[in-house]
Length: 142
Image 1 (cartoon, rainbow, N blue to C red):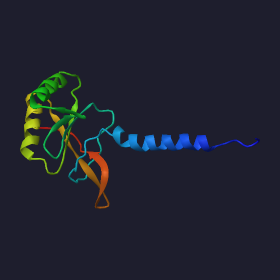
Image 2 (cartoon, rainbow, N blue to C red):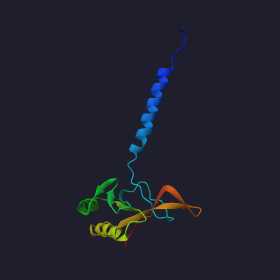
Image 3 (cartoon, helix red, strand yellow):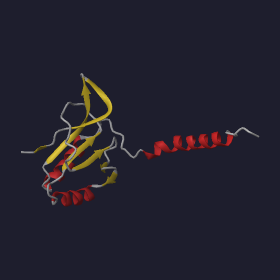
Image 4 (spheres, rainbow, N blue to C red):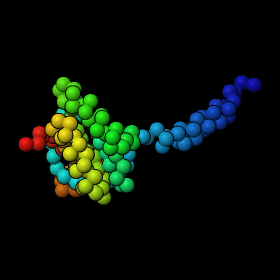
């Protein structure tokens, strides 16, 4: 037989393709949020950043880890002792109650963290872009 049988190779490639198709959605650990729209400058990439996210149900996430109010206060206290102090970026779904956001902001200010900003969807030519996040400029509270 002078020809190479490629059927087993094609079978293996199809099995690998199916595995990657099934595994790809599991690799996404992001929290799905519907951010409000606004125009602002992007946050510098070299800044230390604490990302606090609120989902539709009002649950609080430190980066992607679900936390409660007590753990939040402990982590904010530890973060406030760092030099330079990190900046806090709040990412909240449009439907999140402001009361919940205000509690977190107050907890951060109690610990001495003063640079707090909000993430929004960016607008390009007056139209909001989906799935792009523009970090609002973080200004110290006076």
